[in-house]
Amino acid sequence: MMTDSSWRDTLRALPVFAGELPGFNTDAAPDSPIPLVEEWLSYAIDSEISQPHAMTLATAGADGVPSARTLILKDVTDEGLWFSTLDNSPKGRELAANPNAALTLYWREHGRQIRVTGSIEKGPREVSEKDFLARKPSARAAAIAGPESEILSSQEKFLERVEEAKAILDFRPDFVPDEWNAYVVKPQTVEFWQASRDRDQIRLRYSREASGWAKNLLWP
Image (cartoon, rainbow, N blue to C red):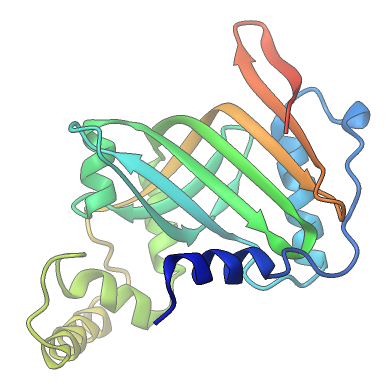
């Protein structure tokens, strides 16, 4: 087993970025952040980066203890960035107690990161239903098979419950659990972070104000 010092040396020696990194002309940045989110996301998709829509969502309950997990970005609209979950999941319960969150999109191949903080709102019911029905049958079955993040007695029990859930969906292919919801993160701040080969950083933050958005460069 490595000692603390050897882990530190090993981790510090690891390469951070490989290949060419894109530039970031902050003078040409739009007046609001969503078009720039779409531009960076489109570039990541066009570059065939692995899982360009993976994002980390951080929430906290009434006790203020944070938790984070990686999930899939479902949509980008003028309102904000969307994801879906069950109301009775840990993050669903935390959002009910504290409807604020932070999320991060990170594309290491481009040395780019977008950080968003904002309030959370549920989307229209039809959006939630459409989202659930667009999931693969196995993903829909897993979502209704049992209580997310609760203790599981065995893998066999999980497989048994999934098969039961599949039978329900075979009988009712349009079934959507009432607890399934699409959520939108309505940004209050959006920060765009661009690395460079010499470890310099460019940081541009948008902050929502009554009259629109303020743009400011940040010290690295």
